[in-house]
Length: 217
Ligand code: AP5
Ligand code: ZN
Image (cartoon, rainbow, N blue to C red; front, side, top):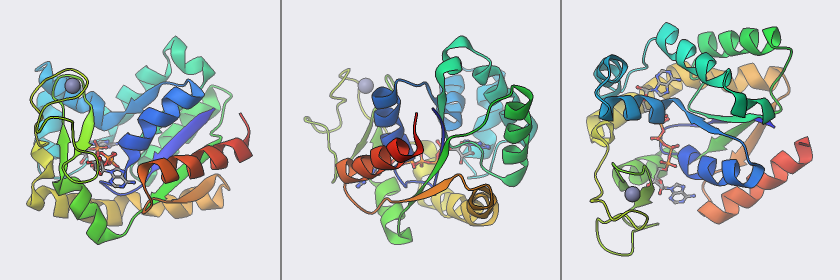
């Protein structure tokens, strides 16, 4: 199963991706997570990515495409993959098509998670993440058992540096101008399925499972 998760910042892509990867036993590849991991490891890539991420801008395509292609070459992607946050503009989508075609493979499904804009801001500004294991929480909808402490590993939770309001506004603008055109791109290719992301995490996941089941494994 080869799947893309599309949707605006805060739509719940990362939240659903963890569940989908487990259910369908495919690797979860998040470009945002790869950049954040590099930042924690203090690599050149991490430093470069931070400059763009904190401003709410996209990391340059050449850098991002190369990272994804290197990852897709790994053995565990033979059985499929779930791309979360990539592609993010038409240039990246065209490059991914070219890459998959060269490998003689194709996408099974593009899941487009739709959420109202007011709810997006509420979700992003209330998000807390674990800097140690990457788990995601929300102060209202999915708080940890103990305030500000990760349920899974006990680390102190933090707010992502690009989750402050000015970065969020820019990320939403970038989504509108650069990422939204992918809805039309994949609709034309007949791979897009819209998912109502305004429902609860579990309800959204049920709808996703149905959509992926219908598309076949
Ligand atoms: P990235 O990490 O991909 O961030 P994003 O797309 O902005 O998405 P988010 O992580 O903000 O949201 P999400 O949809 O995963 O929501 P989540 O599940 O956490 O990218 C960050 C940056 O990296 C970019 O700005 C760019 O600079 C760079 N980058 C990444 N990919 C790139 C690419 N391909 N090219 C160039 N640059 C790239 O949920 C949000 C909150 O809501 C959480 O608190 C969660 O608990 C809560 N929540 C989730 N679902 C629900 C629900 N159903 N009901 C209520 N609350 C919910
Ligand atoms: Zn943790």
